[in-house]
Length: 387
Image 1 (tube, rainbow, N blue to C red):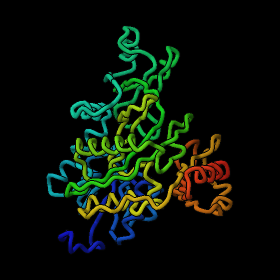
Image 2 (image 1 turned 45 degrees about the vertical axis):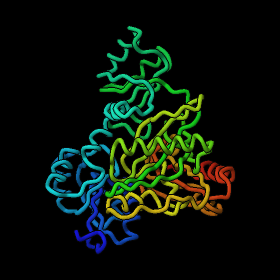
Image 3 (image 1 turned 90 degrees about the horizontal axis):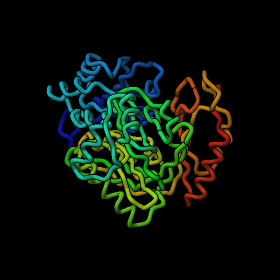
């Protein structure tokens, strides 16, 4: 690939491991610059398959599939953490540009190793222990080493509420998950905050304003996202500074989502990070001068980072598969929703729906968060994804 100042984007081959909705939106941003995109995913019906330049069926968890795929591209990135990092390390050794860096990805994909990084850099996070299985967790409770309430997270492969169990009572122990786990104190949460921070190949950093995440308790995933978050100037400054410190700790190239808890005493804790574009940054497509997807491209291509200034307050609502429905997706109420002023609907192109599956999102822009939230609630109540 030529020098970045003389780059011919149409000759630049960008590889993305994973073809879900994040991959689709990253490809959409790449298409704006005529970047030739390659997607590796095991499903020919994945969200990104219809928008990328080249789609290859393969398993991003398998060494050979990832290694062979990497040989086709100039720059390789991810839209999911659960990829074969051994192949990425070998490709990097052979000169391929791989972002996020494979050695950093190996740490972040393991929630236990993530916590150790926070400890090493004296970054605030809830108290935790690492245990090998649910039997060890039960033994720790019985021995008085572990007290209710606590949260169990599988160290690997958890996302969108999967791999997480909230344990408040003795009876809840029946819901413990199998496998190596991170067990941490349950924080008395006032707000859940996310900060998207980007770092390019030159080490330059750009930070999007913090957002507030409101969770669906049944599905344990984000339901609404308020941008900007309603925080005091003092706490906002603390949150942003902490995101910078986390970015410095990992030294990752690309977009990093830093999820945090603000507790009832206004103390901030790091929850976890995601080394890629993130659900908490979807709204930047419409409400910021630079989307998180373009920002990720700028970062990994070594370009100057874009402005993160907000154009408008917004509320994003995740469009989830309706309870009680599984099968071919049908969108009821779509016509009414696209008539709402300021509403921007994104459908991910997933052919099959199931309860609480992320099928799309809507970002509503308005002059106030309150008005945007009312409209987002109307969309949530009106647009039903059934089968």
